[in-house]
Amino acid sequence: MQIRRATPADAEALSRIAERTFVEAFGHLYPAEDLQAFLRDSYAVERQRVILETPGYAVWFLEREGEIVGHAAAGPCGLPNPDVRPEDGELKRLYVLREVQNGGWGGRLFQTVMDWLLADGPRTLWIGVWENNLGAQRFYARHGFEKVGEHTFPVGRVVDREFTLRREKSAPPA
Image (tube, rainbow, N blue to C red; front, top):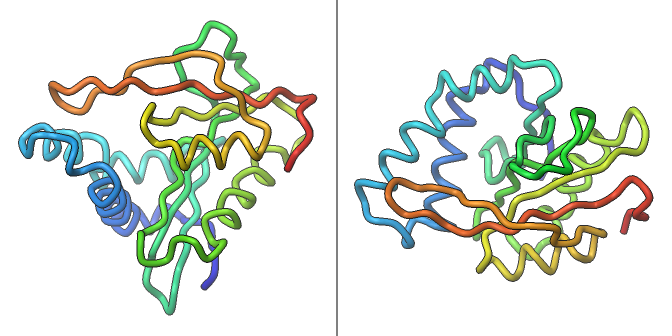
């Protein structure tokens, strides 16, 4: 397995793995038409290309023998919290296919993102996580993130409640 940074040429691959991992993790929660509309809007190839071309954003792939089995994305914080500052960073996505979970690779992918977000020095970091994703909440808590609020995440007509997590500059890394 290896981790590599994605480039704009990877937009189609990013679109595919983003859809696949979201459906695997959460697809069962939504009516088919809502899920399809969300996937079409959120993970369209051109939208992924824009992310990959935008300075200040980065995406990494987890690959096994040339197959992408996970991805992570980071950039400036866009979460709806009044305490967010322009210099704050956000882990926007972290997904690993079920078939490769529990081998430590999700943690390595997470650490790659954290290293990138903190490369220019300490700053406050943010994450949004679904209220019922208890495993992710425990994982992020082990890395110094604390719940500081809530926000909504719409998938079609379904509106999920998400927890807003933050790790202050002064919080020690795990």
